[in-house]
Length: 305
Image (cartoon, helix red, strand yellow):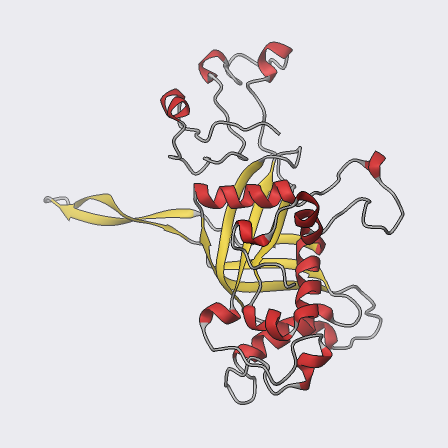
């Protein structure tokens, strides 16, 4: 995969290879075409070869999400459950939602006999406050089990105390370190981080990347546990997190690292029904192992080994 120039703000920036744009990054899609030679719709629709190179529209629908940091106490106490949760979140999602608009607010001034008004910009704010990841619940309530353990560990639903699951036999039954070990209390130990990528139709280049940080669940859905006659539907869980969104060229590079090393095979001709780990989809952990890349490259601590 070739490396592209890490800037998108004109020829001068392109030559200097600076990181002065939100589209900066070696794995980002760039557009440096001279649009002054293309009239778009003004003189009718011309989709001959001479014009098609100027009109490559943004196409939605190809996105990935990665668990950059799992909640530490969950990884410590419920190691096997955390491995399953990470794998399912990264491969079983059906919808990612929550990115808000960038909005400007204005300060108003008024004066004159007619009380005329004008406004100056006062602030520009990102309206993003939540991340929602939608998945189907599986038999055995794997998602509900994990989310409730996470929430109750940070604030027990009866005592209101942050127990982190210590002195709980549930830790051992979920494949964790056991109930004698404890984790110091702190925001870092019970929140998660996610890397979110949207890609071009080749699934090899990034159109957008962001980091969701300080993520903590706002709820664990239970409505599907109720009963109604004739209801035999599947269960889609909307995992909603209170989180902060960050964007930068450095985050673009991390997203590109995940993309390059996730080793997803999209060609149907390479499909094999054999269960030897060589067909179709590979998990992020397998991808890192096969490529010789470890979590220490970005100090991720994302793989609960």
